[in-house]
Image 1 (cartoon, rainbow, N blue to C red):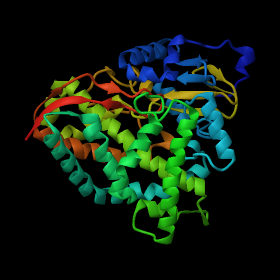
Image 2 (cartoon, helix red, strand yellow):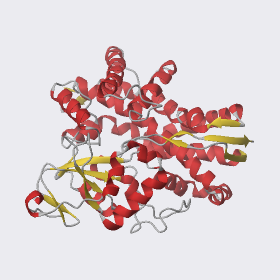
Image 3 (cartoon, helix red, strand yellow):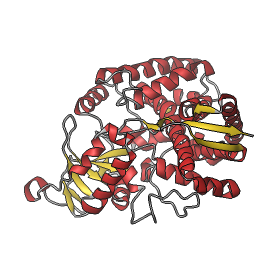
Image 4 (spheres, rainbow, N blue to C red):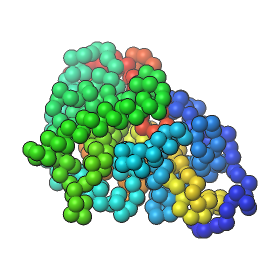
Length: 425
């Protein structure tokens, strides 16, 4: 990638109408249309300029190699000021609130060196030594929720009855929150990530989304005060009492840290578990293969994560004139990194639309890449491994009992309903 002159003067825009799906929340609930559009873009317009109403323009990046190159160059392509795809009104509201010191500013909104310093606050809680100690709890919760499948069966909505709850209990236990508050955290998370879904959203406007964030902030403000007055041995205390370069972490950085851990820390894993089960149901041969050889669980989990892609995209903004795949990108222009597309790239994955529990290597980008690689990736993998290791040997029969439904989103999401019929040992 090299510097170039202003493309607005020297280059006609490479525009392909198929790229508009990336700005349409409902397209992520229509897998066939989405994957057909992304395959077309990878082949015909891997770097495409997108202009749609209500959004600021952006470049759609759909090839695995290009996304990795951009992620590597985190000084050239920054997260701030546009870390994810939202409508112009929401972009403006976020920037206004951040400048006023009252806006959500999580790790995904930050760049180094501040990102690096803030990331360290929770990093120790996701290291192998801590996760090894959490493995027992992960296995216990997996058994509890598979037992609940047996109790609720034979027919249930796996996404809502099981998948959203197991990782919720895991991450909120890590935070040290009381179980009585778990339903509240789940509802706020679904309202935040389901802001474009008519079933999940609190309302369709920017003010509704800001109200959801305010509810999060109010809850965690009280928690912060409590943990500062009476520290405990949990992640909440680590966040509340964190210091950056010897100074207490700012109030907004503290509240934002809670929000990202308490929401993305379980919602993405829920999507992986529900979507992973759907892939097994759609591919009974692979389900049988995994049941007959549980040593494949590690690669099976990676394949579930590759196919589900709970985080659909992130965005970056060019800090200088540059190029991607020979296409000139001007300073100040944004690029959308389509992880959904990257994970089906024919140049990286053999038969990319096939679900293969033994796929190896599996260089998916569902956790991102580079300095912003997902902080909780190892925890998510462990939870999914625990759950399916508990579930699969206990299955007598299992099948779909209705039509699966996906969340309408352009950011985080997966299945919101997965009706199944199951009998367990």
